[in-house]
Image 1 (cartoon, one colour):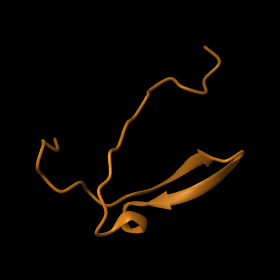
Image 2: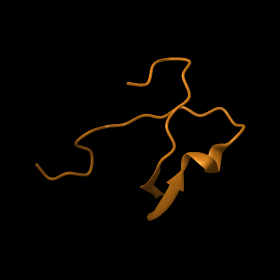
Image 3: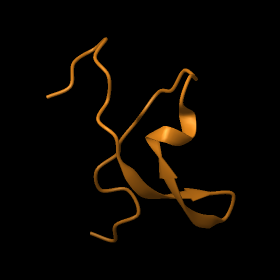
Length: 46
């Protein structure tokens, strides 16, 4: 489990940005502040 102050593990994933799906990576934000938020269940039709 990652805790506050620890480095996040590297990943690649699809994201919805400006009307289309793109692939993003943690490396895209190297040397920048980044806040990651995850919403399980978003975009599902359950």
